[in-house]
Amino acid sequence: MMLRNVEPRPLLTGFAALALLNVALSFRNLWPTPAVVPALAVSVEAFALLLALAAAAALGRAPRQRLRAIIAVALTALVLGRYADVTAAALFGRPISLYWDAPHLPQLALLAGESIGWPAFALVLSLAAALICAVYRLLRAALAALVAALAAARPRRALVLAGVAAIALGTLAERRGFADDAIAEPVTVGYARQLALAASALAGRTDAALPPGPRFETNLAPLSNADVLLIFVESYGATTYDDDVQR
Image 1 (cartoon, rainbow, N blue to C red):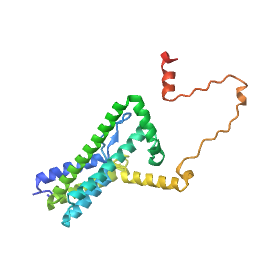
Image 2 (cartoon, rainbow, N blue to C red):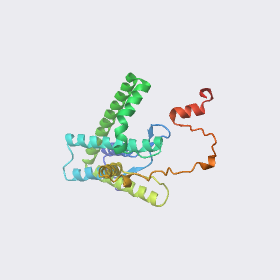
Image 3 (spheres, rainbow, N blue to C red):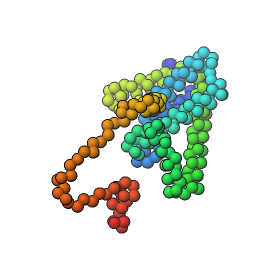
């Protein structure tokens, strides 16, 4: 009864735009690859944006084109943060640290360029930049569609009701144990964690930022002068160890 006489076209475009924004901030990694797939999860940030835009529309202060472009840039940064978070955890087995990992990016780029060739590396960078631009344009289009849908009172009420219901259902699913990740971890929390880690490191509080180091004290007496082979097994070492032809 509450959705009676709601304009179908703005409502459908609004739901489609909201779904796209939610997927963009809640996707998961397709392990063990760098690809991502949609997740059945709710993004708190997407629905917080919905409520903010709905309130602005109700007050007659819908964001204009320039402000929508700024919001789209912020959303793109959130998407990149989400991708880095889920991909690093899946491929490297640990969360990413911008403060500790970023200084190694030039060496990593040099290694990648020498491994695959600089023309291929330049092509990869160009494709990555084009993909980021495409994500920005898609998010900006979705944002414009959502703003247009929220301009009318009835679609606005329906979208806000759907957003509140999605958050409530996701929270209930997590608390009842139906799904551990029904509510996606907010990307803004990850960025705040990175800032806290950087601030702690810059202030010299690295002991609080890093786990305790391993103990190196040992006693080699049980070896009784036996011969010992010390083998370093990493990327090339693993290939030598696993491939009989390389032995």
